[in-house]
Amino acid sequence: MADDDSEFFPGDGPSSGISVSLTAGTLQAIRERVGKRGVSAYLEKAAQRQIERDNLDELITDFETVNGPADPEAVAAKRARLTGTPSSEAGAAA
Image (cartoon, rainbow, N blue to C red; front, side):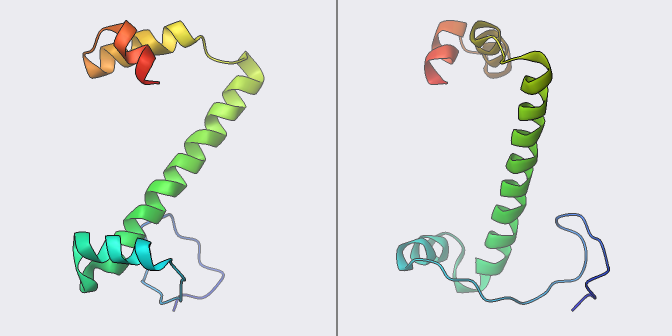
C-alpha cells in the first residue's frame, strides 16, 4: 500500500485493497456485466467517472457564480451541434 503522503491522480498509483458495501442488487448487476473477477476494475472505472463528474460540477458551479446560469436555448443549440439532432429535440432531452 502507498504511504499516505503520496499524491496520485485518479487512475494512477498502485492498487490498494479496501472493503466496500453494496446492495445485493447492485452487486448482482455488476457481476452480470463483468463477471466475478471484473468487479474491482468496474468499480475503479465507475469511481473515476464519478470523480470526473464531481470535478465538472464544481467547474460549472464556479462558472455560474461568476457569469450567471447558462442560457437554456444556447445549451440546446450546442447540444444539437454535438449530437446532430435538431435543437428542439436536444432541448427536450435535457
